[in-house]
Image 1 (tube, rainbow, N blue to C red):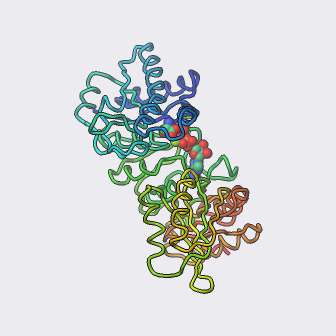
Image 2 (image 1 turned 180 degrees about the vertical axis):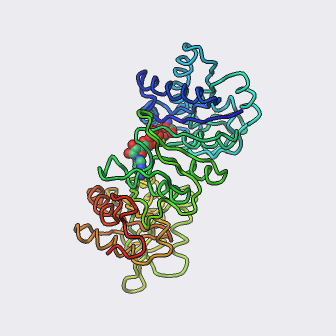
Amino acid sequence: MRILVQKFGGTSVDGLPCMLKVKEKVLGGLGQGYKVIVVLSAMHGVTNTLLDMASSWTPHPDDAEMDVLLATGEQQSVALFAMLLKEAGIKARSCLGYQLPIRTDPTYGSARILDIDRTRIVDLLQRYDVLVVAGFQGCDCTQRITTLGRGGSDTSAVALAAAVGAQCCEIYTDVHGVYTTDPNICSKARKLNRIDYEEMLEMASMGAKVLQIRSVEFAKKYNVPIHVRSTFSNELGTIVTQEENSMEAALVSGIAYDKDQARITLVGVQDEPGVSARIFEPIAAANIVVDMIVQNPSKEGRTDLTFTVPRGSVRDTLVILERLKEDIGALEIFHDDNVCKISVIGVGMRTHAGIASIAFATLKKENINILMISTSEIKISCLVKEKYTELAIRSLHEAFGLDKEPSTVCQEEPLV
Ligand code: ADP
Ligand code: ASP
Ligand code: MG
């Protein structure tokens, strides 16, 4: 049995005209002799509306019930789409996460997929030509509904493709593929024909929401080729796969940004062993993910400590820090929500020096102050004021020659 997985995001299922485009893609898959697993997201804006509804009812919505609520967005999409297929005489049915089942851990709101019942799916595919599966959802061992975190339908699709050994996992969205940076921010962004799993993972982790991070982790682990492409055209998109010469052999392959960042500064903390542990242990225990950390020793045995957390975690972090303030001797606590992390990504950085200095010089030329810096062997991230996001992306994109085809970019010499 040849199986194709096709996933369609929120803007691709936003009303009947869009769903008819989705139907064309599914018919295309059937026409090529595949059994098709279609994974759908909730219609555009529906998940946000459900989140807003819950928080207007109660300031701290119950996590498990929140997942029951959020999963209804995808339930609407699969029911409506399955109706369209059946009306056209196609042997199809809708499937919710718990019906397959897609088994996850019980971390409501960001559950991890543990197991998918392959036999059951293959059995269903003997009887149906198309399974219309609700993305983003699964169930835990107590049969409670779970959701996989924002953008989680990508992960549902790749995990299903891995479980059934699908030929390919097509991710249909509102852009033509993976670009050198967000094409909605930078008009000169260039579509990539191929991208290596590792670089895609870094792009996704640094904020390029075109694929959810966990979907790329799954694809890499189980070697599932992903084809990211547009629902609204027949153009080929971007193949995400294992490459020898990664991503068109570029030094820098892309620029990502993440606005979901907030900076917290503790002024004049005691500079002695164990203070960082006293600060970060309770933050970690509250499941708050700390990203960048900078410590600047100041005078008289004191140090300033600055770190970033997701914006939604600022309030909880401040509550923890206020409790600790006296114990760690902090003089003041500041926070700033209007920041953005810009990341320059490329596996070529491993073997080439000077990329960081080009990035810093480019931001300086635009008079953009760098608030924090963090690096790994294949990325450099700079935190800047949020108002400079677009300017920073465009100038870095140009400085690294990302708007030009790779053959015209000097590969061996430093760029400046
Ligand atoms: P869907 O609803 O189909 O899952 P998303 O909104 O989650 O779509 O992801 C697609 C969006 O990702 C695009 O509209 C684009 O703005 C954004 N994006 C960010 N970085 C990139 C990138 N490097 N390449 C392509 N799209 C990107
Ligand atoms: N509907 C969910 C979201 O908006 C999952 C998804 O679209 O992938 O995040
Ligand atoms: Mg998405």
